[in-house]
Amino acid sequence: MTISPQTLWRLKFKHLRLIDILARTGNFHRAAEELNLTQPAATKILQDVEDILGLLIFDRSTRPMSISDIGEHVVDYARRTLAEGDRFTDSLNNLRRGGFGALSIGAILATSTDLLPQALAELKRRRPLMTIQIKAATSDILADALLRGELDVVLGRSPDDFNGSRFEFTPIGIEQLWAFVSASHPLAFRENVDYFSQHDFTWVLQPKPSPLRALINRVAIGHGLPAFDNVVETTSVSVMLQLVRHANMVAVLPHTLVKREIENGDFVRLPIQLDNQLPPHGILIRKGEVLSANALEFIAIVKSLAAGISA
Image (cartoon, rainbow, N blue to C red; front, side):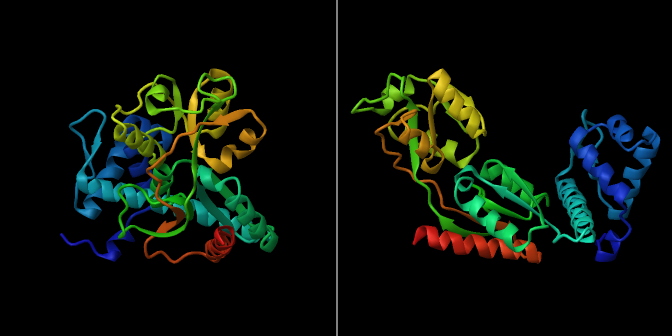
């Protein structure tokens, strides 16, 4: 059976909502509750979708239900369509109130101190009534959210499994990484700090599979050590800084995020070289998508600012 574009016209909002919920829960009972339906009604809706598309989306023989290989594409489509609908209604409501629509931006930590605030300030100067949503996370999480249609544009790094058929990536900068500790840490103020001595202490790092965590593990392995396992994982910069300050942990972050604390004497930069640089960060968008005027203006501002910062 060949699926034509006209086939998709038969899919309704309730079909997409059920697919999304079933993919998340794997359970007809919970899906029916969320949609305020009976379980037989929810089962019938899924059967209708699978009849329309002529394929099996979920494997009912497992508990919870699992998504079939081809069903992954259907789930991805449902989530992107629902997310696009949410963004459309938010933007439309904003426009009706006299605003400039909405924009959803994903940003990694390295852009949050200089580039992103400057870009947002200029964007709000030009379009003061635009609604802007910011999601801060690691690049791998943001790339997934971008593919699901939850974000319009990402300031981050290309994911490790970068696929040129799904993303367009424009590099705009490389950040310098600093390893640091509190001023009371046993490693503070040592003239020579080797990788072996670091390995004896607890580290607070971004979780796998973030690019920064992968780099730290590669550095350890490159010096004949196992990947760091005495680790506390978090994506929160504030949590990292508090654990360094109060729990004597070792951390690595882009220098722009800790430069002020180090200059003030709260933290001490360790005299070690992180030889393996992270990939450049930049602008990540979905391949072949027609961007909104808001997204295009934000990207133009970011490129202009990045050129000035690197000059």
